Length: 77
Image (cartoon, rainbow, N blue to C red; front, side, top):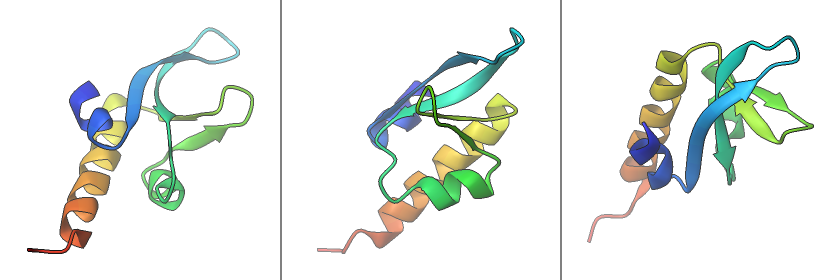
């Protein structure tokens, strides 16, 4: 999954919630991705500046969608 995130200029990591619960998180530059990440269940953590997801499959689905959308938007030569 780190490879998917890297294609968007981001990284993934475990984020520790207040009560010790670890959840998948996306760190990095989110320019133009915020609405999509929220649609896939991402929650913005203002303090840590990461998007936190309920599960790894949800984060993976968001990354795959963002990459697919980015590739479709790329002009063909």
